[in-house]
Amino acid sequence: MSGKTYESLVTDQFGSRAEAYLASVVHAQGEDLQALVDMARGHPAARVLDLGCGGGHVSYAVAPEVAEVTAYDLSAEMLTVVAKEAARRGLGNVVTRRGPAETLPFEAASFDFVFCRMSAHHWRDFEAGLREAARVLRPGGRAGFVDVISPGVPVLDTFLQAAEILRDPSHVRNRSRAEWEAATADAGFVASVARSYRLRLDYAAWVERMRTPKLCADAIRALQAAMSGAVRRHFAIEADGSFTIDTALFVLERS
Image (cartoon, rainbow, N blue to C red; front, side, top):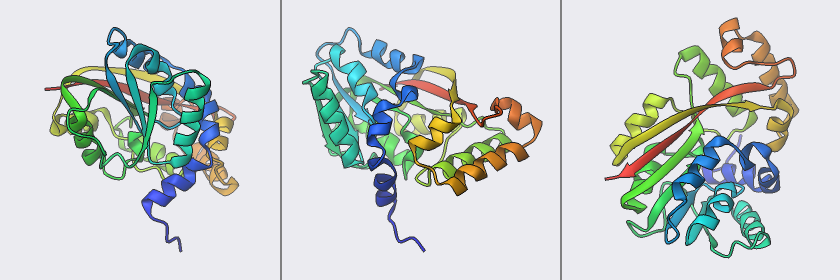
């Protein structure tokens, strides 16, 4: 029986894979990443929080546009990789801080932008993380949250959550667009724009990035094969296990 805390589970899962996330093509590019850069452009004096920075791709992309980026993550190993890579790229305005999303070690209204990309589905307390993000964003500031989105339909949602947790036991939940909209409003954000995307995941790279045990990887493939045609069509499941998921960018303002 595992005695791990949630924090140790997350750090164990991601700490050893920090370099893999740095090298991940899926994380290093995308329309959603460019949209965050576009939000920051034209604000050279801005302070930005990259919340749940992972391999640091938001930090690297946004840093040339602003005064300072704080790359924040629960994994110390991830932050070591981010600091090293930022230095390699000559991005002296990227600083790192460690901690959970639910209790941010920053004063209220500390940042002009809060960006969070592919992190919120790992938060132990989604609503608390959103409240903290709103707290540290200055009035009139803007936030950009990117995450995997549950399709909302129960059978599609069940498949997605099952595949995610088999791959990575630190997964908590992918929320639907409606859940995101309700939670961000409750946290004090005002919705501005929501954009939807489709993201193809190469199965072999997806499981290798987390070093998913063979037993769990085989279970994902068995699950894919057992699902109905409606599920297989929605996720565009391919012969090699690659599939396509829904993601979204929520652009929010702090009233």
